[in-house]
Length: 429
Image (cartoon, rainbow, N blue to C red):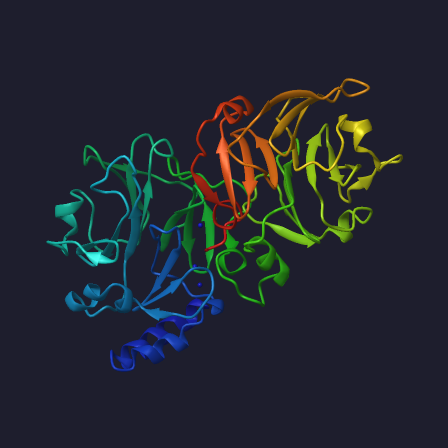
C-alpha cells in the first residue's frame, strides 16, 4: 500500500513551526489527511500497519487522527527537533534475522534504526556509514526483497535519481525510472509498490519503474478513509469485517467475488481495489447467505442449500434459464456443502463437505463425485478458492494457502495463517 492542496502547504508548515513543541498536540488537529496532504514518508510496521509521516506527526493505519511521532519514536526528537522524516522503511527479510523487521528512518544526514519500537544501540548514524553510496536528504525509500528485485535491495529516491542498494553486497546501482513521477514517499504493501507524489500515487514495477494501468490515482480513494471520497461506507465495513466469508471465487478473467451474509465484494482483475454491494442487487434470485461458489467457463455457480444458481459473468450478470438446478444434478452430491472450487483451465470441481473432498467432472453427465481424499487439518472450512498461486482455504477470519490440491490433501500440519481482512482485502488491521 498520501495529500492538502499544494498552495496551502507552505502556510501550514509555518503554522506548525510557530506552534513549536509545547503546542504540538494542537498541531495534529490541523492535519486532516482528507485535505490532500503530501506525506513525507510511509513505512509499514512489522505488524503490517502502514504509518504515514507528516511533519512531526504520524497517521497510523488508513483512518484516525494524527499523533505526534515522538510519542512512538521518542529518540527522533531527542537528536533532532523533529520537523519531518525524509524517508522510512521496514527491512523485511525473514532469512536475515539481524536485519529483519527493523524500521529505518532517514532525517537529513542521519539514519535511525528501530527494533520493536526501541532505538538500536549506536544509532543515529550517518546515512553514508550505514548505506554507503546513498546520498543525504532523501525523498523516499522502499524495501524490495528478491524476487521483486533481482536480489534483496532497498530502493532510495532523491529527485529523479533512483538508487538500488544491494543489502548483501552493499553495492549501489543507479537506475533511470522513466515515466514515473518523483516520489515524495514510497512503500511496499500487499506485495505491490506505490510511489506517492502530492496526494496522488502510482503503482510501479520496482525493477524498471514502469507504471502499468491508469495512474496516477487519488490517494484518498485508496489509502485514506475519507467519507467524501469513499463511494460507500459498506465497502469499508465489508472489507474489514472480522466475520468469516461464506464463499469466494475467482473467474476466468481473474476477477474475485467474495460473499458474506447479505453482501458481496468484487475485485476486478489487475485492480487493487474492492467494490461492495448487496447480493440482492446483482444476484437477486439468491437473496443472501451463499454456501459455496465456483467459476467455470465464464459462469458463476452459486450453491445455496440443495440448489445451484448459475449466472453468466457480465455487466450485469445474467441468471440462466432453468436455474436454479438441484445440487445433486449439477455436482452429484447431497447438500449442504461447505466450499467448492475449480482450478484454472480444468473442468474438475473440487467439493468440500465436512472433511471429505470430492472430485466432480463437470463435463460428465450425469456427474459422478469421486472421493478424492479427506483432510483432517480442519473439521470444517467456510470457503475456498483456487488461482494461479494455488488453493486458499478460508476459516474464521484467516485463510491458509496450499500450492495445489494435492499438497492440500497431503498436508500433515496447518500452514501459516493469513489474516483475510489485512492480506486479501488490504485493510489496515
